[in-house]
Length: 258
Image (cartoon, rainbow, N blue to C red; front, side, top):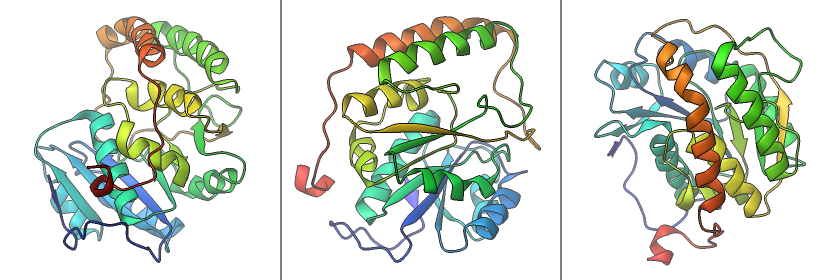
């Protein structure tokens, strides 16, 4: 893994910018510059990190040219692995909160301020697509699975959730101290299992409605076969989340833990 940044100092830094915006990106060279510009416009005081998740195109190069700090992973780890690396970086660098934004342009960076306001009452805030705002529609087996998942997770975590697979979410320092070390890397782990782990660590979870935009570049990862298999994966993700050991909120950095 490479990161265009000062050398690691072995202790948590105090940051002038309290918010880190993270864009996990896989082959998003066509959209990344525009998303970076939108984030800069809506959050000019925040720091921005693009996690290049083993892209085979010019994602990292374009992101750097757009002014973003880039963490380059040596191979594709998936969103879970990319975000775990980002959370660890944010924890060690001393950020107060982290927000994940899709690099394909579907999330509106203007909503980041609304997510941050919701952190006053929660540790993890999810930007929900199916909470009364926007016209984003999912149909077929994937929709059935998402309804089952929302209902099940709402019971597990004790709070109403309509969109638990949304990748548009913000965490505060308490959640960051958990996710920096225990963030799930499996498929759906970064969304489904992460919420269950947060709940088991007594973190407060909330959602706010957001409007999802159409992807402006690249190819969606879902196809008919994957949509049909989604239900089975959802059930598996829930079982893994419940069976996993109880999480630990570590007060020290990676150096201190070692």
